[in-house]
Image (tube, rainbow, N blue to C red):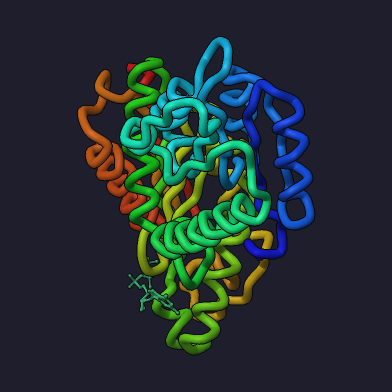
Length: 308
Ligand SMILES: Nc1nc2c(ncn2[C@@H]2O[C@H](COP(=O)(O)OP(=O)(O)OP(=O)(O)O)[C@@H](O)[C@H]2O)c(=O)[nH]1
């Protein structure tokens, strides 16, 4: 999947002829994106999808290459994009400064196309491998959604962001009802299949890009919804519960329904105002999930601390 798309190379140079030559050299194998100034480069580096590599001229009017590189490295979204500096041999190249700024390599002008291509290829192959490692570290192997490690990272990021903006953060703990009975009745392979369907359904039902579902462990899932008030979060939680019911996955061994259902604990709070740590928010949602289970399952239990 990753390799079927052309990798994207952002080429930054204030001289159009240099950009043209680099595009000519690379366009048969890579998607190229031109930028004629440091300011434009920062903008184009932050698009979706992100570039896989940046060729960055050092000497440019306005923001020079070092300043652009520093800005890219300061932004969590763009900090992992490899940067190769481009410099004329006549300009005294400060190699140490280039690597300290975060570059992975540098190329001197005038270009030798075969060398440019070879260096770009090496760094793009490394990038593919790094992306794959990142993916393996963050994606749950069974369900293909984020795993608990990634969830913890996202929760910490969103916690800080919503704390700064003083906006509510909603967190749901979700658990499949009577799932032990499901495994016992239908077998573990069918159980795995059921978890995959539940995960896909939760993921597809969430509409807003920052809303994220992850597998918390076993048959337990977690959803974070930044900048979402109690009413909105309650609406989404109810939609998730219904969407799982509507899958109508038969569950003859369930003690509450003839099909697979979920219970949800939902907590909404403004970080640091009503709740002191991300862990506490998880604990509140977990207690509510426990209540939902105790009171019959296939239901949502909810608290909006941001209203207090
Ligand atoms: N098939 C499959 N089963 C799993 C996986 N992870 C956890 N389970 C099973 O999920 C079941 C969870 O059971 P319990 O924690 O007792 O909860 P429950 O049966 O869902 O009951 P309630 O949560 O109270 O409704 C256990 O039987 C685990 O073995 C998995 O990856 N695949």
